[in-house]
Image (tube, rainbow, N blue to C red; front, side):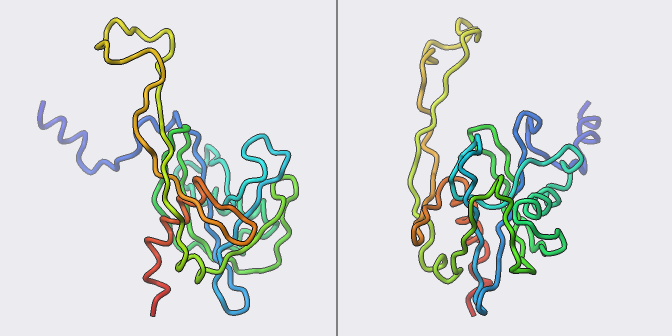
Length: 209
């Protein structure tokens, strides 16, 4: 039995447990050069969208079935569609850390360089775009706060089988770090700020001589 288990697990590429239960998406953190200075590009979601209207985000969206093994393609495709550019106008530079969220999303973030400044946002998805100088972000990284996360079992769960310490009502489980920052009139927070913070931590050495 032991040898069979070893054979089954040997050289196996690990994945994310119950991955199919998540809504899988991919986003791009776009670097763009403006007047010889590196900026990061952000979008403001259209006001009539059903989900998070008017909020600041990075370009991105759902990973289609045929892209599940290549989420970077979804990030580039969505960026192209939202910003009105060709996919060839995005140069992928690498991947950031995968982000699972308590809301049931699994997000694959990537970093890319914009090879054009001729951008025509899709108004059905994007109200406007803006950029923030990387120098500002390196000196003013996102602020860390916390949001409480609680769970509640569904009414059909067999409570009689588990210890009575597990209550039927909402129970706080942990405090989840949440990040935010302000730039000009823009408030950047939540998942977008968390991905931004990950990028700044991983890539800051590349921008210091």
